[in-house]
Every structure is written in C-alpha cells, then in structure tokens.
Length: 310
Length: 305
Image (cartoon, rainbow over all chains, first blue to last red; front, top):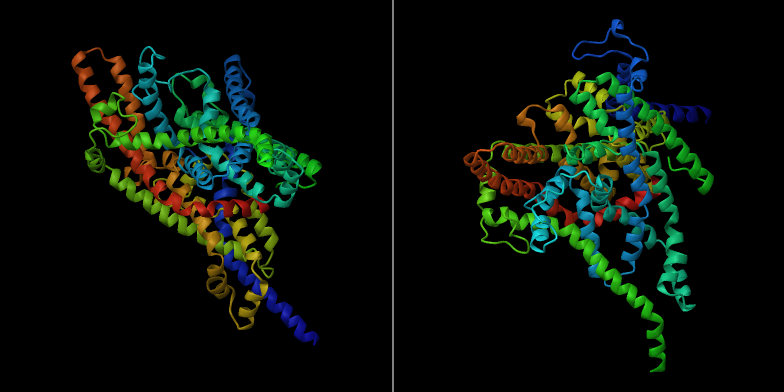
C-alpha cells in the first residue's frame, strides 16, 4: 500500500518535470524578450557609443543622472517634458468619468438597434492604429479638409486653416483624440458591469416611484463605482507612461513644446541625438517612479476595497 | 384615462432625458463614423473636386482610378503581403501559445507551477525601455528580420490569464477521464482542451490580429529593409511625404514650380486617402463579424485581470 502510494507520487513528480520541459521553450522566450533587456539598464552608468561594446573604461557612474539637472537648459527641458506628461495624464484622470457616464446613459436608450449601432460605431476607432488616426485627422483637419472648407463657406474662418499645425490647446486636443479612439471601448467594461446589476432592485425602485435619474444616481452609478475605482487606480499607476505613438504622430514644429511627453522625449533623445545613456537613465528613473506608483495605488485599493488589483 | 395622464406627468422628465440622450449619442456616432465615410467618398471622387474640399456629403464624379493607381505604387503590394503575413503568423503563434500555457498553468502537476506563472505575469508590469529593447533585438539578430514581428509578442501574459481562467472553469472530470484512459498531457490539450476553449481563443485571436495589423513601432525602430515594410509604415511614410510637400510649396517662390508641386500634391492627397482606406478596410470588414466576442473577453478579463 505504502509502496504503491510513493510510486504514485513519483509518477506525479516525473510527469511534472516532463510538463515543465514542455513549457520551457516559452519560459525562455519570456526571459529573452522581457527579462534580458533589463540588463540594458547598465548603459545608464556608462558612456555608451554604439556600436562599440561596453568596457570599464567608459564607466561614468552617476554622471548621466547628475547631468539631468546640471544646467539651466537641461532643467528647463526636463521640466517642460514633465509638465506635458503631467498635463496629458492629468486631463485624462480628470475626465476619467466620461466613459462611465457614456455607458450609463447609453444603457438608458430603450431602442435596441440604435443602442447597438452607437456602441458598434463608437468602438470602431479603438481598432485602428495611431498612424491611421493621424491619417484621418490629417484628411479632416488640413487646410483643404472639410472643417476648413466648411468654416470658410459659413464665414467662420477667413482663409484655409491647417488645424493640426497649431500650438493652441494641444493637451486638450490630444485628450479629445484619445477619447475619440478609446471612450467607446472603455464604455464596454461599464456596460458589462451594468448588465450585472440585479433587475429586481431597479424594478423595486421604480415601483416606489423613483425617476430614471434617481435610479441612475442611487443604483446604477454606485454599482459600477468599484469598476471605475480600479480603472482610476490603473490610470494613476501608469501616470508617467503615456506611450509615444500618439504624440509621435501628432508632433510637428508648431506644437513641439507642448506635445513632448516622457516616452517621446526618451525616444527622441536616443534615436535623434544619440543620447543613448542619458535616455536609458531617464527611462530607468521613470520605471522606478512607476513601480512606486503601482505599489501605492495597489495599497490604496487594498485599503479602500479590501483587495488589490495586481 | 386619469391614470395615463398621471403616468405621463411622471415621465416628462424621463422623456426629456430620452430626447437629449438620443441627440447626444447621434452626435457621438456621427463623430466616430463620418471621418471614415469622408475618406471613403473622397477616395472615389474626382481628385480635383476632392482637393478643393467640395466632397462632403456624397461622392462626386465617382471613379476608381485611385485604387488602381495605389496598387501600382512601388512597394505597396509587398507591404500588404508583409502585413497579412505577420497578422496571420503572429496571431496563430500568439493564440496557440496562450492556449497551451493557459492550460499548462492550470495543471497542478506542473513542477513549480506558481513560480513560472508569476514570472510570466510579472512582465505585464515592467518594461525595460526603448533603448535596452532596441539593443536586445539587435543582439538577437532580429533587426531587419521578419521574426521581429512574431517572437517578441508571442507570449502575452494577459491572454494566458484569460485562457487559464477559462480552462479552470471546465469540469476537471473531463481531463481526469481522458488521463485514466492513458492520454498524455499533450493529447489532453489537443483533443479535449483546445476544442472546448474555442470561444475564448476567438476573442484572443481578434485582439492579437488587430494588434499585429496595427503595429507600427517595431517597423519604425528595427526595420530599414524596404522588403519588410508593413502597410502601417507605408501609410506613415505617405503622410510624412505629404507634409514635406506642403513645406516645399511654402518655401519655393517660382510660380511654375508651385503649380507643378500642387499637381503632385493634389494627386498625393487622393493617394493618401486611398492608402488610408486600403489599411482601414480589412479592419472594417472583420470588425462587425467579430464584435460579439469583445464583451465576453472583456468580462472574463475584468474578473481576473
């Protein structure tokens, strides 16, 4: 009996090892593409000039970290980039309720085909790339586009205007494009949460004479607030990471001072002016702050909801 | 009669809300749809009228020469081929790996299961940054290599979590019965798990395919060989060249050269819109068909992610 049992355990163990061999190639892929690049952070401590390999002769210690704040010009540049990053993420955070309300009122539409149509159409932009978004923006808002020509026809504009070449309200416009692309998609999550609300509760409230606004205020919104809360926390955790593609596409010589966020700056620094090591140093600091933000947001979530999201 | 009247009185506020929501959502729908419509009608309208911004509501003097022209553009067909290839190969690889790992991580027999799972999932929360990534890719010989589109994105933790959640919801007896009959780990996967988790694989396939189709940064950073350019990158280059043509017009004073540049620019505008359509159409075609899978995927993701 005892013998048979231990044989069974052995068999399970061997099977476990065999199964490990099956997943090993994929674990190696992960190590290679996600963990191995972390080694590149050492470049922040060297004076790296590609294509020469690293050598201890080029070791510069914390030079690049110090150089970020060594003179007026560099400080101004870094502050400018930080200001843009904070502005973009700040506006997103400030309006993060928008998809939620979008979903709540969409759910109030009783005509099902119309609701389906709106949902389908507003989700579509989420599935196109930023390159395409920019291509579309260019077609609509360049000086020969419909906005410019209709504006002239109706006497609002005096001459052809290329709306993309402007330094006005850049942050807000970028938020508008982001919302155009993402809001419909983000709303799906809330719609899923709304569909999970107990129908009887709503019916009971209606029998008691609650108006639609009252139902929304006292039942719908409180029920989906937890979802909103998690998304806000994730938003905070990625406060410094706006990604670069959107800003890379929309950047031009007019709006340059307002559109460069950290991710784009790091890219330009390395690819444009060859500042590899400095760029690695900055993105390292960024990663550090991001991890701290993630941990704080998760802690806060545990405190409020009793569970984290990581 | 009195009862109906009472009801109407109560619902007046509700009705007002109804009307306002219908108007607002119509505007939202219009804002999301019209740009696509505008580009579509302009790509088939008379190029001259289109350039002067006359085509706004419906196509004028429709023709399809732009589409014929676009497919004669150097490199476009090849770019389309690369885009299709990376989308098909990339999607199959990503989905199969997600299915397999999702299944393996649900197996309690797997040696150090939790550790491997954590190692994979942790990659969702950090990123080495653009330069270390670039250097790694160069070191691995993936610069100007088709597989740079496939391997780095092959293992996607989020999809693996989706699959694992789905597999764990399947009754364990199904697997156990097959194993008693002598089926090995792989047999169980191919014969039992794979057919059952098809719905979630469909969802993942859409996400992966759209991500592949839309991907742009990898080409921008790691590909200098024109043979490996994708449609996205080609479109990007057309937009760039259009912008530089614009600056050319403003800088040159010569009237004749201005006229000439304008003529090219005019064609450029139509070509650009047509290329945009060519890149958008595949997404438009698969989108309504697969739309029903989104919500399902998102709901499973919301529970677990």
